Length: 262
Image (cartoon, rainbow, N blue to C red; front, top):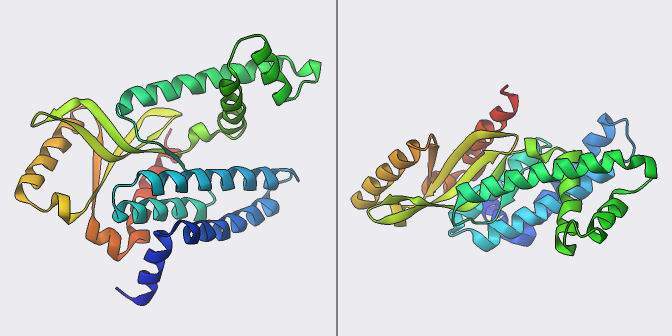
């Protein structure tokens, strides 16, 4: 490994250094939006949303990743999306990822219905904040729900982040059992707008996947997940460590291909 790659790995594994890298990529994206957009306010909205997403994603990665390899891989994936001017959403671990995604999709439907009610009230000259405050006073939501709904409408109705790949960290499948133990995968990617689009990603460090027993167990896991129509994409720890950006780019291409499919 050359010195450049060593320095990059260090930056990807340090939260402050990684956020500085993200800021540089985000600034490029903002300038690009200023060139393309006819709406003078859009670049500022884009910058605010992308900055918040980057910070939330980084917080999740550094809190919940179980190895330095996962940190390298996920942060490289995040930079791949930023470099393309595309959003990417990381979600926290889920003990039952199937149930968590179902609940997530229900929330998006609720947000869409809320946005429709807001549109019907535009003749009253209510802002989104005033409308959600009205819904809260009518006891249609709690104060916590009101804050969540405000962000949800901005993200999933106005900015259409439901058409953006989402990645759940440490995704559990309690009903899938191998040798008496439930299955948990490193990552599960899905596309909210196309719920059939799902992909399991495993980052296989040699320490936990290098034995014959582990190899056999992984094959059993892959078959069990395949029975649920889930494709499993495996990356070795060594290939991630040697060239995390190139490895993440492979996953980036698979996830962004979803966006072009009918």
